[in-house]
Amino acid sequence: MRPLLVLISASLLEAADWPTFRGVNSAGIAPDKGLLEEFGPDKSVVWKTAVPPGHSSPVLVGNRIYLTGYEEKKLFTFAIDRGTGRILWRRESPRPREEKLHKANSPTSASAASDGKNVFVFFTDYGLISYGPDGEDKWNLPLGPFNNPMGQSATPVLVGDTLLCPLDQESGSYFIGVNKNTGKIKWRVDRPDFTRGFATPVIWKPKGGKAQVLLAGSYKLVAYDVESGKQEWFVAGLTWQLKPTPVMDDENIYVLGWAGEADPGQQEKVEGFEEIAAKIDKNMDGKLQKDEFEDEKMRKKFGDLDLDNDGVLDRRDWSMYQAKRSVVNGVNAFRLGGKGDMTEKNTLWKYEKSLPNVPSPLLYEGVLYLLKEGGILTSLDAKTGKMVKQARVTGAPGAYFSSPIAADGKVFTVSEEGKMAILKAGGEWEVTKVIDFNEPVHATPAIADGRIYVRTHSALYCFGKR
Image 1 (cartoon, rainbow, N blue to C red):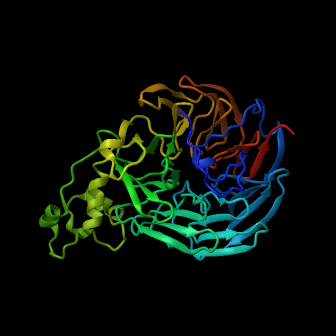
Image 2: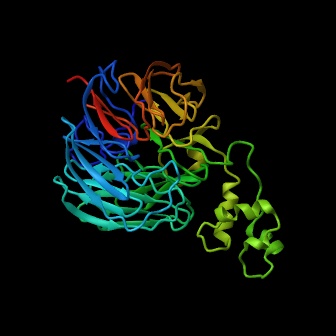
Image 3: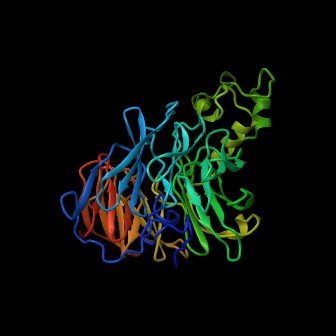
Protein backbone atom coordinates (compact mmCIF):
# COMPACT_ATOMS: atom_id res chain seq x y z
CA MET A 1 0.00 0.00 0.00
CA ARG A 2 1.30 3.44 -0.88
CA PRO A 3 1.23 5.88 2.07
CA LEU A 4 -1.15 8.79 1.70
CA LEU A 5 0.83 12.03 1.46
CA VAL A 6 -1.15 15.23 1.88
CA LEU A 7 -0.21 18.88 1.95
CA ILE A 8 -0.49 19.68 5.65
CA SER A 9 0.75 23.23 5.59
CA ALA A 10 1.97 25.97 3.31
CA SER A 11 4.27 25.47 0.34
CA LEU A 12 7.24 26.49 2.49
CA LEU A 13 7.47 22.97 3.88
CA GLU A 14 10.29 20.89 2.48
CA ALA A 15 10.43 17.17 1.71
CA ALA A 16 12.80 16.75 4.64
CA ASP A 17 10.45 18.38 7.14
CA TRP A 18 8.64 16.68 10.01
CA PRO A 19 5.89 19.31 10.34
CA THR A 20 3.72 18.02 13.19
CA PHE A 21 3.38 15.15 15.67
CA ARG A 22 4.84 12.06 13.91
CA GLY A 23 5.67 13.94 10.72
CA VAL A 24 3.51 14.30 7.61
CA ASN A 25 -0.12 13.58 8.52
CA SER A 26 1.04 12.00 11.81
CA ALA A 27 1.97 8.86 9.87
CA GLY A 28 5.35 8.35 11.56
CA ILE A 29 7.10 7.61 8.25
CA ALA A 30 10.12 9.33 6.70
CA PRO A 31 11.40 8.73 3.14
CA ASP A 32 15.05 8.81 4.25
CA LYS A 33 17.49 6.11 3.16
CA GLY A 34 20.94 5.18 4.42
CA LEU A 35 20.27 6.02 8.06
CA LEU A 36 22.96 5.46 10.65
CA GLU A 37 23.46 1.90 11.82
CA GLU A 38 25.35 2.85 14.97
CA PHE A 39 24.36 5.73 17.26
CA GLY A 40 23.57 6.45 20.89
CA PRO A 41 24.04 9.00 23.69
CA ASP A 42 27.83 8.89 23.17
CA LYS A 43 28.05 7.90 19.52
CA SER A 44 27.31 9.74 16.25
CA VAL A 45 25.93 12.75 18.14
CA VAL A 46 25.78 15.76 15.83
CA TRP A 47 24.60 17.87 18.74
CA LYS A 48 22.86 17.55 22.10
CA THR A 49 20.84 20.39 23.62
CA ALA A 50 19.59 20.55 27.19
CA VAL A 51 15.83 21.13 27.31
CA PRO A 52 13.37 21.02 30.22
CA PRO A 53 10.89 18.15 30.65
CA GLY A 54 7.87 17.85 28.40
CA HIS A 55 6.02 15.16 26.47
CA SER A 56 5.71 17.06 23.19
CA SER A 57 7.60 15.66 20.21
CA PRO A 58 10.09 17.61 18.09
CA VAL A 59 8.67 19.33 15.00
CA LEU A 60 11.10 20.19 12.18
CA VAL A 61 10.33 22.81 9.55
CA GLY A 62 12.96 24.55 7.44
CA ASN A 63 15.99 25.31 9.60
CA ARG A 64 14.03 25.21 12.86
CA ILE A 65 12.96 22.66 15.45
CA TYR A 66 10.07 23.53 17.77
CA LEU A 67 9.43 22.07 21.21
CA THR A 68 7.43 22.91 24.30
CA GLY A 69 8.47 22.22 27.87
CA TYR A 70 7.97 23.27 31.47
CA GLU A 71 10.17 24.42 34.33
CA GLU A 72 8.54 24.43 37.74
CA LYS A 73 5.31 26.39 37.15
CA LYS A 74 6.32 27.94 33.83
CA LEU A 75 5.40 26.81 30.30
CA PHE A 76 7.76 27.48 27.39
CA THR A 77 8.02 27.24 23.61
CA PHE A 78 11.49 26.74 22.12
CA ALA A 79 12.88 27.41 18.66
CA ILE A 80 16.10 25.47 18.05
CA ASP A 81 18.53 25.76 15.16
CA ARG A 82 18.31 22.51 13.23
CA GLY A 83 21.94 22.51 12.17
CA THR A 84 23.63 23.35 15.47
CA GLY A 85 21.11 22.63 18.22
CA ARG A 86 21.45 26.19 19.50
CA ILE A 87 18.33 27.57 21.20
CA LEU A 88 17.33 30.58 19.10
CA TRP A 89 14.59 31.76 21.39
CA ARG A 90 12.27 30.60 24.14
CA ARG A 91 9.01 32.22 25.10
CA GLU A 92 6.94 31.80 28.23
CA SER A 93 3.21 31.16 27.92
CA PRO A 94 0.62 32.67 30.22
CA ARG A 95 -0.61 30.09 32.73
CA PRO A 96 -3.83 31.28 34.36
CA ARG A 97 -4.63 27.86 35.87
CA GLU A 98 -3.27 24.39 36.55
CA GLU A 99 -5.66 21.72 35.32
CA LYS A 100 -5.90 18.12 36.42
CA LEU A 101 -3.42 15.77 34.79
CA HIS A 102 -2.94 12.04 34.76
CA LYS A 103 0.30 11.18 36.54
CA ALA A 104 1.74 10.01 33.19
CA ASN A 105 0.78 13.25 31.41
CA SER A 106 2.46 16.65 31.44
CA PRO A 107 1.27 20.25 30.98
CA THR A 108 3.18 20.28 27.67
CA SER A 109 1.94 17.18 25.84
CA ALA A 110 0.69 18.62 22.56
CA SER A 111 3.34 19.03 19.87
CA ALA A 112 3.71 22.24 17.86
CA ALA A 113 2.64 22.94 14.29
CA SER A 114 4.44 25.26 11.87
CA ASP A 115 3.94 26.73 8.40
CA GLY A 116 7.65 27.40 7.86
CA LYS A 117 7.50 30.94 9.23
CA ASN A 118 5.28 30.83 12.29
CA VAL A 119 4.77 28.26 15.02
CA PHE A 120 1.48 27.35 16.71
CA VAL A 121 1.31 25.75 20.17
CA PHE A 122 -1.43 24.59 22.51
CA PHE A 123 -1.28 24.43 26.31
CA THR A 124 -4.06 22.83 28.36
CA ASP A 125 -3.57 25.57 30.98
CA TYR A 126 -4.02 28.42 28.50
CA GLY A 127 -5.06 27.70 24.90
CA LEU A 128 -3.50 28.50 21.51
CA ILE A 129 -0.54 30.81 20.83
CA SER A 130 1.20 31.78 17.60
CA TYR A 131 4.78 33.04 17.49
CA GLY A 132 6.59 34.57 14.54
CA PRO A 133 10.07 33.72 13.19
CA ASP A 134 11.84 35.70 15.90
CA GLY A 135 9.56 34.54 18.70
CA GLU A 136 7.35 37.62 18.55
CA ASP A 137 3.74 37.21 19.64
CA LYS A 138 1.46 36.97 16.61
CA TRP A 139 -1.76 36.19 18.46
CA ASN A 140 -3.16 34.46 21.55
CA LEU A 141 -6.45 32.56 21.81
CA PRO A 142 -7.33 31.66 25.42
CA LEU A 143 -9.41 28.47 25.64
CA GLY A 144 -10.84 26.45 28.48
CA PRO A 145 -10.84 25.65 31.30
CA PHE A 146 -11.37 22.03 30.30
CA ASN A 147 -13.28 19.26 32.00
CA ASN A 148 -10.74 16.49 31.44
CA PRO A 149 -9.33 14.59 34.43
CA MET A 150 -6.41 13.34 32.30
CA GLY A 151 -5.45 16.67 30.73
CA GLN A 152 -5.70 17.73 27.10
CA SER A 153 -2.97 16.46 24.76
CA ALA A 154 -4.13 16.39 21.12
CA THR A 155 -1.83 18.30 18.75
CA PRO A 156 -3.27 21.10 16.58
CA VAL A 157 -2.94 20.44 12.84
CA LEU A 158 -2.38 23.04 10.14
CA VAL A 159 -4.02 22.79 6.70
CA GLY A 160 -3.48 25.81 4.50
CA ASP A 161 -4.63 28.80 6.52
CA THR A 162 -6.72 26.75 8.96
CA LEU A 163 -5.40 25.55 12.30
CA LEU A 164 -7.50 22.63 13.53
CA CYS A 165 -7.78 22.15 17.29
CA PRO A 166 -9.86 19.33 18.87
CA LEU A 167 -11.07 19.89 22.43
CA ASP A 168 -12.90 16.75 23.53
CA GLN A 169 -13.61 16.48 27.25
CA GLU A 170 -16.09 14.94 29.68
CA SER A 171 -18.64 17.67 28.95
CA GLY A 172 -18.68 20.58 26.54
CA SER A 173 -16.56 18.93 23.81
CA TYR A 174 -15.97 20.97 20.68
CA PHE A 175 -13.72 21.25 17.62
CA ILE A 176 -12.52 24.55 16.15
CA GLY A 177 -10.92 25.78 12.96
CA VAL A 178 -8.81 28.88 13.55
CA ASN A 179 -7.44 31.38 11.01
CA LYS A 180 -3.68 30.89 11.35
CA ASN A 181 -2.97 34.51 10.43
CA THR A 182 -5.34 36.24 12.86
CA GLY A 183 -6.15 33.71 15.58
CA LYS A 184 -9.87 34.24 14.94
CA ILE A 185 -12.16 31.21 15.10
CA LYS A 186 -13.44 30.43 11.58
CA TRP A 187 -15.84 27.72 12.72
CA ARG A 188 -16.78 25.77 15.80
CA VAL A 189 -18.49 22.37 15.96
CA ASP A 190 -19.99 21.24 19.26
CA ARG A 191 -19.52 17.52 20.01
CA PRO A 192 -21.97 16.74 22.85
CA ASP A 193 -21.82 12.98 22.20
CA PHE A 194 -18.07 12.84 22.83
CA THR A 195 -16.25 12.54 26.14
CA ARG A 196 -12.53 12.90 26.78
CA GLY A 197 -10.31 12.16 23.80
CA PHE A 198 -6.66 12.65 22.90
CA ALA A 199 -6.22 11.70 19.23
CA THR A 200 -4.62 14.18 16.84
CA PRO A 201 -6.68 14.86 13.66
CA VAL A 202 -5.55 13.46 10.32
CA ILE A 203 -6.27 14.85 6.85
CA TRP A 204 -7.78 13.20 3.79
CA LYS A 205 -8.43 14.74 0.38
CA PRO A 206 -10.89 12.82 -1.80
CA LYS A 207 -10.14 12.73 -5.50
CA GLY A 208 -11.65 15.85 -6.99
CA GLY A 209 -12.93 16.94 -3.58
CA LYS A 210 -12.01 19.31 -0.78
CA ALA A 211 -9.78 18.42 2.14
CA GLN A 212 -11.44 16.73 5.09
CA VAL A 213 -10.23 16.44 8.66
CA LEU A 214 -10.86 13.09 10.34
CA LEU A 215 -11.18 13.14 14.12
CA ALA A 216 -11.44 9.96 16.18
CA GLY A 217 -13.28 10.28 19.47
CA SER A 218 -15.67 8.46 21.77
CA TYR A 219 -17.49 5.71 19.84
CA LYS A 220 -16.93 7.08 16.32
CA LEU A 221 -14.67 8.81 13.82
CA VAL A 222 -16.11 11.87 12.08
CA ALA A 223 -15.00 13.55 8.84
CA TYR A 224 -15.43 17.34 8.66
CA ASP A 225 -14.84 19.77 5.82
CA VAL A 226 -11.63 21.64 6.66
CA GLU A 227 -12.85 25.05 5.54
CA SER A 228 -16.37 25.04 6.99
CA GLY A 229 -16.42 22.41 9.75
CA LYS A 230 -19.42 20.76 8.10
CA GLN A 231 -19.77 17.07 8.96
CA GLU A 232 -19.39 14.91 5.86
CA TRP A 233 -19.49 11.29 7.09
CA PHE A 234 -18.73 9.11 10.09
CA VAL A 235 -18.09 5.53 11.15
CA ALA A 236 -19.02 4.07 14.54
CA GLY A 237 -17.80 1.05 16.50
CA LEU A 238 -14.92 2.65 18.42
CA THR A 239 -14.26 2.37 22.14
CA TRP A 240 -15.09 5.11 24.65
CA GLN A 241 -11.71 6.81 25.08
CA LEU A 242 -9.41 7.42 22.10
CA LYS A 243 -5.75 8.13 22.81
CA PRO A 244 -3.81 6.92 19.72
CA THR A 245 -3.89 8.87 16.47
CA PRO A 246 -5.23 6.99 13.41
CA VAL A 247 -3.06 6.16 10.39
CA MET A 248 -4.07 6.01 6.74
CA ASP A 249 -3.22 4.83 3.26
CA ASP A 250 -4.84 6.00 0.03
CA GLU A 251 -8.06 4.08 0.59
CA ASN A 252 -8.40 3.13 4.27
CA ILE A 253 -7.99 4.44 7.79
CA TYR A 254 -6.93 2.39 10.81
CA VAL A 255 -8.25 3.52 14.19
CA LEU A 256 -6.89 2.05 17.42
CA GLY A 257 -8.59 2.45 20.77
CA TRP A 258 -8.15 0.81 24.14
CA ALA A 259 -9.98 1.85 27.30
CA GLY A 260 -10.51 0.30 30.70
CA GLU A 261 -13.28 -2.30 31.17
CA ALA A 262 -13.89 -2.57 27.41
CA ASP A 263 -11.94 -5.68 26.42
CA PRO A 264 -13.96 -8.51 24.83
CA GLY A 265 -16.15 -10.20 27.45
CA GLN A 266 -16.23 -7.20 29.84
CA GLN A 267 -19.39 -5.68 28.39
CA GLU A 268 -22.64 -5.49 30.33
CA LYS A 269 -26.18 -4.49 29.49
CA VAL A 270 -27.19 -1.32 31.31
CA GLU A 271 -30.87 -0.46 31.51
CA GLY A 272 -32.13 2.84 30.14
CA PHE A 273 -32.42 6.09 32.06
CA GLU A 274 -36.20 5.86 32.36
CA GLU A 275 -36.01 2.31 33.74
CA ILE A 276 -33.37 3.08 36.36
CA ALA A 277 -35.03 6.37 37.33
CA ALA A 278 -38.36 4.58 37.85
CA LYS A 279 -36.64 2.31 40.35
CA ILE A 280 -34.42 4.64 42.36
CA ASP A 281 -35.35 8.30 41.72
CA LYS A 282 -36.96 8.71 45.12
CA ASN A 283 -37.44 12.48 45.00
CA MET A 284 -38.81 12.31 41.43
CA ASP A 285 -36.60 15.15 40.16
CA GLY A 286 -35.61 13.33 36.98
CA LYS A 287 -32.00 12.97 38.13
CA LEU A 288 -30.08 10.34 40.04
CA GLN A 289 -28.41 11.13 43.35
CA LYS A 290 -25.52 9.15 44.80
CA ASP A 291 -27.47 8.19 47.90
CA GLU A 292 -30.35 6.87 45.75
CA PHE A 293 -28.15 3.95 44.64
CA GLU A 294 -28.18 0.94 46.94
CA ASP A 295 -25.49 -0.84 44.91
CA GLU A 296 -22.13 -0.02 46.54
CA LYS A 297 -20.36 -0.51 43.19
CA MET A 298 -22.44 2.26 41.65
CA ARG A 299 -21.78 4.55 44.61
CA LYS A 300 -18.03 4.12 44.10
CA LYS A 301 -18.38 4.79 40.37
CA PHE A 302 -20.59 7.83 40.83
CA GLY A 303 -17.85 10.44 40.51
CA ASP A 304 -16.66 8.97 37.22
CA LEU A 305 -20.20 8.84 35.83
CA ASP A 306 -21.00 12.44 36.78
CA LEU A 307 -19.34 13.85 33.69
CA ASP A 308 -20.27 17.50 34.23
CA ASN A 309 -19.48 17.36 37.97
CA ASP A 310 -22.83 18.77 39.05
CA GLY A 311 -23.45 16.17 41.77
CA VAL A 312 -26.20 14.27 39.93
CA LEU A 313 -26.54 11.91 36.99
CA ASP A 314 -28.76 13.22 34.22
CA ARG A 315 -29.85 11.61 30.96
CA ARG A 316 -26.58 12.40 29.16
CA ASP A 317 -24.42 11.05 31.99
CA TRP A 318 -26.39 7.82 31.97
CA SER A 319 -26.42 7.39 28.18
CA MET A 320 -22.64 7.81 28.14
CA TYR A 321 -22.40 5.13 30.85
CA GLN A 322 -24.59 2.82 28.77
CA ALA A 323 -22.39 3.30 25.73
CA LYS A 324 -19.21 2.88 27.76
CA ARG A 325 -20.34 -0.49 29.06
CA SER A 326 -21.35 -1.78 25.62
CA VAL A 327 -18.31 -1.01 23.43
CA VAL A 328 -15.38 -3.31 22.64
CA ASN A 329 -11.76 -2.20 22.34
CA GLY A 330 -10.05 -2.80 19.03
CA VAL A 331 -8.17 -1.57 16.02
CA ASN A 332 -10.69 -0.93 13.25
CA ALA A 333 -10.03 -0.73 9.53
CA PHE A 334 -12.46 1.45 7.56
CA ARG A 335 -12.70 2.55 3.95
CA LEU A 336 -12.50 6.29 3.49
CA GLY A 337 -15.30 8.51 2.24
CA GLY A 338 -19.02 8.68 1.78
CA LYS A 339 -21.90 10.68 3.16
CA GLY A 340 -23.60 10.31 6.54
CA ASP A 341 -23.34 7.07 8.49
CA MET A 342 -20.86 4.88 6.62
CA THR A 343 -20.30 2.33 9.38
CA GLU A 344 -21.84 -0.68 7.66
CA LYS A 345 -20.50 0.09 4.21
CA ASN A 346 -16.98 1.16 5.19
CA THR A 347 -16.07 -1.36 7.91
CA LEU A 348 -13.38 -3.77 6.70
CA TRP A 349 -12.14 -5.63 9.79
CA LYS A 350 -11.53 -5.36 13.52
CA TYR A 351 -8.75 -6.84 15.65
CA GLU A 352 -9.36 -7.01 19.41
CA LYS A 353 -6.37 -8.66 21.10
CA SER A 354 -3.25 -7.34 22.87
CA LEU A 355 -3.96 -3.67 22.20
CA PRO A 356 -1.80 -0.66 23.13
CA ASN A 357 -3.08 2.01 25.48
CA VAL A 358 -1.25 5.16 24.35
CA PRO A 359 1.13 4.54 21.40
CA SER A 360 -0.38 5.19 17.97
CA PRO A 361 -0.27 2.40 15.38
CA LEU A 362 2.24 2.45 12.54
CA LEU A 363 1.35 1.54 8.96
CA TYR A 364 4.49 0.81 6.98
CA GLU A 365 4.83 -1.11 3.71
CA GLY A 366 1.52 -2.94 4.12
CA VAL A 367 2.09 -3.94 7.75
CA LEU A 368 0.23 -2.46 10.72
CA TYR A 369 2.29 -2.40 13.93
CA LEU A 370 0.76 -2.21 17.41
CA LEU A 371 3.10 -1.53 20.36
CA LYS A 372 1.73 -2.49 23.77
CA GLU A 373 2.93 -2.01 27.33
CA GLY A 374 5.62 -4.50 28.25
CA GLY A 375 7.18 -4.08 24.81
CA ILE A 376 4.76 -6.46 23.11
CA LEU A 377 4.74 -5.73 19.39
CA THR A 378 2.06 -7.13 17.08
CA SER A 379 2.24 -7.02 13.29
CA LEU A 380 -0.97 -7.32 11.28
CA ASP A 381 -1.57 -7.71 7.57
CA ALA A 382 -3.19 -4.34 6.84
CA LYS A 383 -5.43 -5.78 4.12
CA THR A 384 -6.97 -8.54 6.21
CA GLY A 385 -6.29 -7.70 9.86
CA LYS A 386 -4.71 -11.13 10.34
CA MET A 387 -1.91 -11.32 12.87
CA VAL A 388 1.50 -12.11 11.37
CA LYS A 389 3.67 -11.98 14.48
CA GLN A 390 3.37 -11.09 18.13
CA ALA A 391 6.39 -11.05 20.44
CA ARG A 392 8.20 -8.96 23.00
CA VAL A 393 10.72 -6.38 21.81
CA THR A 394 13.75 -8.09 23.30
CA GLY A 395 15.80 -5.79 25.49
CA ALA A 396 13.16 -3.06 25.75
CA PRO A 397 10.35 -4.08 28.11
CA GLY A 398 8.39 -1.69 30.32
CA ALA A 399 5.80 0.99 29.64
CA TYR A 400 5.45 2.82 26.31
CA PHE A 401 4.14 6.31 25.59
CA SER A 402 6.23 7.15 22.51
CA SER A 403 4.76 5.91 19.23
CA PRO A 404 6.71 3.80 16.71
CA ILE A 405 8.10 5.44 13.57
CA ALA A 406 9.70 4.02 10.42
CA ALA A 407 12.20 4.79 7.67
CA ASP A 408 14.83 3.02 5.57
CA GLY A 409 13.23 -0.42 6.07
CA LYS A 410 13.44 -0.03 9.84
CA VAL A 411 10.99 0.52 12.69
CA PHE A 412 12.06 2.55 15.73
CA THR A 413 10.45 2.23 19.17
CA VAL A 414 11.36 3.90 22.48
CA SER A 415 10.21 2.75 25.92
CA GLU A 416 9.41 5.04 28.84
CA GLU A 417 12.67 4.06 30.52
CA GLY A 418 14.57 5.23 27.45
CA LYS A 419 15.43 2.09 25.54
CA MET A 420 15.23 2.52 21.77
CA ALA A 421 14.83 -0.65 19.75
CA ILE A 422 15.63 -0.73 16.03
CA LEU A 423 13.74 -3.43 14.14
CA LYS A 424 14.01 -4.84 10.66
CA ALA A 425 10.60 -3.96 9.23
CA GLY A 426 8.15 -6.56 7.97
CA GLY A 427 5.44 -8.87 9.17
CA GLU A 428 8.13 -11.13 10.63
CA TRP A 429 9.96 -8.18 12.18
CA GLU A 430 13.07 -8.72 14.25
CA VAL A 431 15.07 -6.61 16.70
CA THR A 432 18.52 -5.70 15.39
CA LYS A 433 19.71 -3.27 18.06
CA VAL A 434 18.73 -1.70 21.40
CA ILE A 435 20.11 1.70 22.50
CA ASP A 436 19.84 2.80 26.13
CA PHE A 437 19.39 6.54 26.72
CA ASN A 438 19.50 6.01 30.48
CA GLU A 439 16.61 8.36 31.22
CA PRO A 440 12.87 8.49 30.56
CA VAL A 441 11.37 9.19 27.14
CA HIS A 442 7.74 10.11 26.48
CA ALA A 443 8.16 12.02 23.21
CA THR A 444 8.03 10.33 19.82
CA PRO A 445 11.31 10.64 17.85
CA ALA A 446 11.59 12.37 14.48
CA ILE A 447 13.51 11.47 11.31
CA ALA A 448 14.36 14.04 8.65
CA ASP A 449 17.15 14.76 6.20
CA GLY A 450 19.06 11.61 7.17
CA ARG A 451 19.12 12.48 10.86
CA ILE A 452 17.34 11.01 13.87
CA TYR A 453 16.07 13.24 16.68
CA VAL A 454 15.30 11.87 20.15
CA ARG A 455 13.89 13.86 23.05
CA THR A 456 14.56 12.55 26.54
CA HIS A 457 13.42 14.22 29.76
CA SER A 458 16.53 16.41 29.85
CA ALA A 459 17.83 16.77 26.30
CA LEU A 460 17.16 16.77 22.58
CA TYR A 461 19.65 14.66 20.59
CA CYS A 462 20.46 14.89 16.90
CA PHE A 463 22.17 11.81 15.44
CA GLY A 464 23.67 11.62 11.98
CA LYS A 465 26.71 11.90 9.80
CA ARG A 466 28.48 15.17 10.31
